[in-house]
Image 1 (cartoon, each protein chain N blue to C red):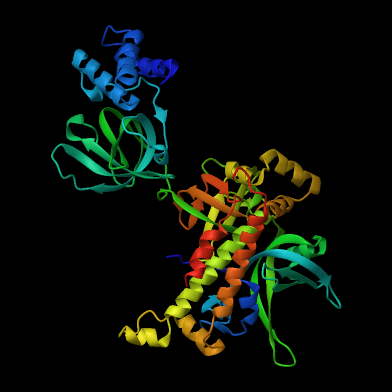
Image 2: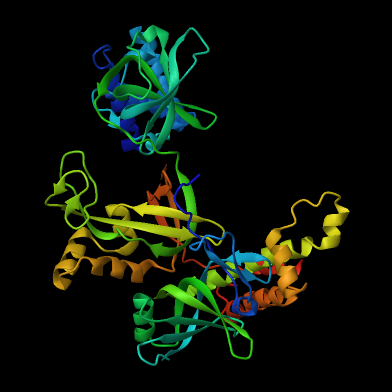
Length: 312
Length: 212
């Protein structure tokens, strides 16, 4: 581990104790250095050990520290490491029966990207979460058990109920196949500019707000087909650009030159139909939302299929 | 699960098998019910996905444009595709493409009976796009694998085999239907799959060997 990486970790730990202990970043870095470079302990374990040492020294509970005010704001699907202090906005999808007196509430939180288990401790003395409500949760800690991640609400967690709705997505799936169709409503589209309304306009009209001055966006509603199953996939502006190489600006220019927005979707069809892709992302209803897209253009292996073929 | 009508899968099939198919059917009496072409290996196909070499295009229309495309697979067998005024995108693709070129076609199987009672099968394209050798190769492997899966399923469901098992479970209705319509052998399609794979394998072996 490089000196600078170590220092970053050290200053993060230092920040947590700066108000409680008379300790310098150098001292923290030295402890980390010993564990990581001398004892070959993984950095996550070293951080844990060093943090615990200072917790003891300060007579503090693990719950009382956090990474200062600057937690990372995450989406559920981003949670991929334990012991991270994060903020997230999520809906209470489900409340389960707590199996222990130590647990006040346990259940499932969700956002567009997926769902994650949460635990709220009795001793944290936090307000009650209600099923179906959306909350902004600041200062929660991630945890991992057998490869599954969860979040824990603790004494320092700030819970704020929000007056908004979240459509909770399932966990990410991976689909692949040939792109066999790009459906109508793809390409350069216009969305309703009204607050919290992102409906796609039909002939300049929003089904909710009537005639409005729309805002341009890029989108593809495509179909991946592997010969056995079909998957409908939605590519947002970023994913559409990655797929087609066409930016929103370029799409607007194309449409302006042609005095017609449909040229954009036509060009996209030409560039992508009949190609093979692998897409990873959460599902929303019958759609997969493309978070990652990869074109399958690499070499294929006829040998394996041939061996199988000759055996029948 | 889905309340909206589910989209039909695009089957992968080599031209040899596709052109041997002739029997079509519907699953319900509803006028708008999908029409399926029964593949000889015992699979129903309402849609196909084909990647091959476009070798020739020709406007065979009399009053209006009606484009014919010949798309050849690695076995040298030909898919015929026809696009007219109701398939404007595909028609203009055929008009503008310059054979030979690798193309992908998504489309619906169509059959018509000639005067002498032969049934011809073609693809009515939903889209035709130019692709590269990479897509062609992937399609060949994929189509061979799926053809071989069908052949295996067909062969494992001989009437005797299902009697041996006692319960007549799992006799695929489309395999049964294919036996009735086309007879009992699917060996030719297994051969087509093997030959197609060998043609790819051969191409690879003739490439200069690097770093060996």
